[in-house]
Image (cartoon, rainbow, N blue to C red; front, side):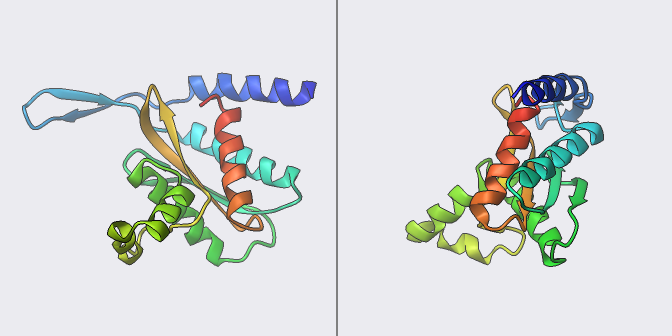
Length: 168
């Protein structure tokens, strides 16, 4: 238990110090927006944390982390994970970022809401559990996607644990 607490504190400290500098973007009215996004160091911390969380439950996986623009920042793949899981993890992360929701919750909505069923036709989206947004001050700054950990519930749990351990 003490090791887990120390690891969480270290991860939270690292996460706070590794956010990339704000992105400066021109808005429609000519003003400038400052936007936070994930750094490479934080993306790698999240990916390593998700793989460690999967390892704790006896699973291996692929983890993909995207920044606020949906760009792939980091991918880490555990040993003996099927190759299709790399693309699945990336799509779960992208889905979560793009919709600002957990990919599994979006999948549930699509199954139960006829008006949302067309989301199944968007090839970049993967409506399975395992994609979780990373938020800072209420804004989505990136997302983590996990695939191959023995089912969507495990995938999502690993992503959530990594994000929580990083202090988000």
